[in-house]
Length: 127
Image 1 (cartoon, rainbow, N blue to C red):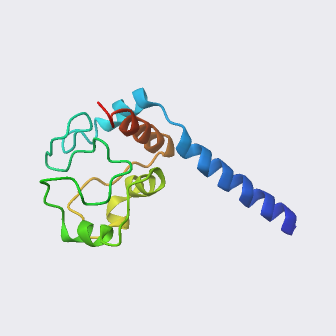
Image 2 (cartoon, rainbow, N blue to C red):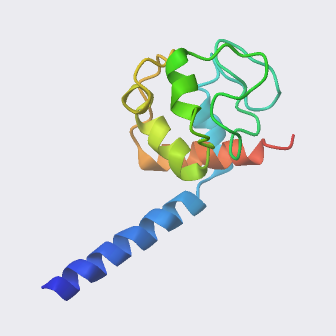
């Protein structure tokens, strides 16, 4: 029984790591339209929210000339960097991860949508 639990846990961890490695940037661009009223990912310009161009690998609450909420500044104060895993957790439920964030979006509920948006954000990092 213990062996089965260990194997199941290992498979879940492996699948979780692979899930973040995939994603379809074209489909992610379509899903990103939900975000596009407040964010851009194709230019380094702030809107209601900060630009998400190059967000993966960027320290939390660090995009120039954007007025982050105190909650987001506190969340990033210990040096957090937006990587795929942190971004995936945040996109699932922004307010659950950062209570007091200015972001009013409820989150993306489908894991595939999250993977696709991350793939899209990665594809726009150097445009």
